[in-house]
Length: 303
Ligand SMILES: [Zn+2]
Image (tube, rainbow, N blue to C red):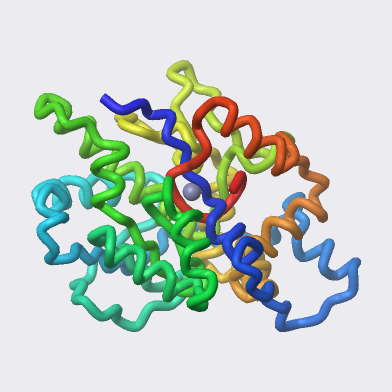
């Protein structure tokens, strides 16, 4: 079985604009420094509506032959994902998913696309608006990834082919482990589309990589979720999600940065005094030394 050490990064959505030289989104509304600090302070999320939230989700599985195993797995996986979010008070309602997305909207209707590798590369370069001169560079960035979450588009694109080859076990007796892994990937990616970032992002924030329970359950927004039967979350993440889905303070934070996760993290870091585990360059160097230069998904932290 492949090592679960596969690291995925919330990071790509965050890093790609830098790598590809794209302009960062400009905040739509200008605030003074003090107003911005108050908006991004996690000390007080303001009133959070914790009533159950309905969230529509389209799960599109490409008809490509590369998705044969995915088609076999997806029904049970969808149930697992639904059960996970129900514990958080989020009722996922699966909607029919054709090749063209429905009317997607942040905090209302999201979409997960499970694609062939070629389809994934095409969808990703389109979503990142990669201009032709940067295409080769983009392919390099994609080399060890299999998923990108695009918060502004309310879509996650997953290369099932890459995921299957790089992550899943080929041993038939590991079928249920593989299903767990795919379910966990979907939970994680949907977490990004609900405004959450990686547990590993900062060293001094209230989002641990593992829960403080006796099983040390992995946090679903951590990078330790491969094949795990159970994932968890902390109360603070539940508050963040409800604040986002209920269009409370967290939603307003994202509106302020045009739903740009990179800018969002910069401001969260700045206004809460959070520190990253290691400088970005050191982390990359460390991973290269360890022969593990990459991570598996999308939107940020260490890429
Ligand atoms: Zn991630």
